[in-house]
Image 1 (spheres, rainbow, N blue to C red):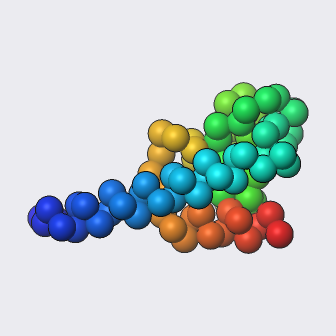
Image 2 (image 1 turned 30 degrees about the vertical axis):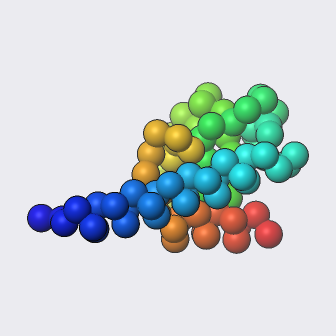
Length: 91
């Protein structure tokens, strides 16, 4: 069972990951889906380091997790490692 302190720490980590993702989405290169240029992507392939619209995220999911690991920017939980991998993939 996790203690209250552990839950609070996990929430702080998740909040920081969320802030980093939202900052990345403000970058001009990330304001559009990488595949179809739709405005305001809210999904990401974190192992490739790209942001996607919901339609293209569905296509990437069908490719399989051995190719593209898709998560929602807002709805899913991100680990610090996933955020770091997604930013390094871009560089």
